[in-house]
Length: 175
Image 1 (cartoon, one colour):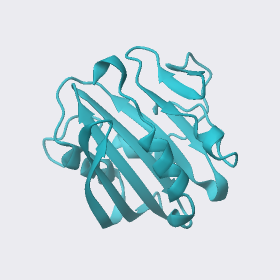
Image 2 (image 1 turned 180 degrees about the vertical axis):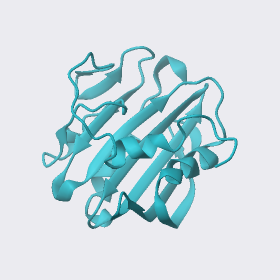
Image 3 (image 1 turned 90 degrees about the horizontal axis):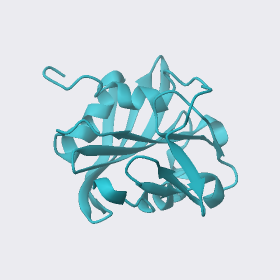
Image 4 (image 1 turned 30 degrees about the vertical axis):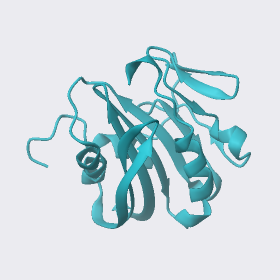
């Protein structure tokens, strides 16, 4: 995508499997009272593992928060506060540029924590494997929050818990 800010296409790659590496460094989120809280601005989200015991936390380079679920499904929260951001629809579509053979199957506006956001479902090829994905992108106060679900199997099997998870987002002091 010509003219895209650096890193746009890399956001999904971090959750989809490219760069899916464990790290041993300071984590910018902490768990308290069943919520993962981002340390700098206080944005928070419910613990996916508490919503569904088949999910477990994975510490990865890149996403603010990541989980691995059944059938090699992955869910993550990626936060970027670079000051300027495109509208939520454009940011959501920018997630897809690192993938091949992308077919958006469904998309539209949703409200997340009082802000008009963008949700989409798609099929794509990621590093030679077919994946299904769901994404919800929220843009506010110079920050973009992406909530992603990526699986090589049936997306519908994971969507109910994913929807409860992203809907639990609270913006904190930055948005």
